[in-house]
Amino acid sequence: MRISRLAFMFVVSTVALLYISSWAPAQSVGGYATISTAELKKMQESGKEILLIDTLADSRYKQEHLPGAKHFEFPNGTMDPWDKLKTGGKSSDDFVTLLGGDKERALVFYCLDDQ
Image 1 (tube, rainbow, N blue to C red):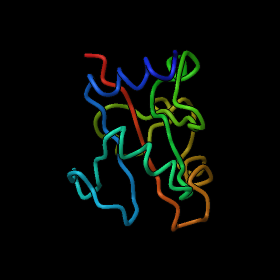
Image 2 (image 1 turned 135 degrees about the vertical axis):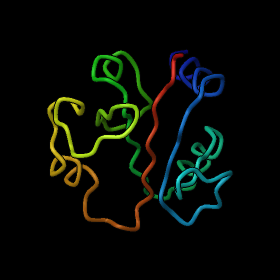
Image 3 (image 1 turned 90 degrees about the horizontal axis):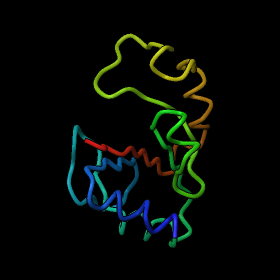
Image 4 (image 1 turned 90 degrees about the vertical axis):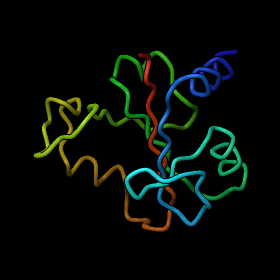
């Protein structure tokens, strides 16, 4: 099954799942909580509204992504100032629009490190 294969890839690969919420984090990276796929599944099953954001390249997102994930390409490493060439042509305003106005909603960013 495609989703199971994708979940397996996340478990065996280095994955950063970051979110902003009141959930108890497994660990912290740069002030953000890093969660496991099991914790993400628990969040989804709880009914709490979350915004799942896939940060992979557009071609990879189109190939496969987690159900319900929105796409917003981000580069590896830092990006200061904002560089539309590294975000699939999207601006910081596009990012703010994607995030929406609900400051209480959990945000989950994920990517896959194939290396």
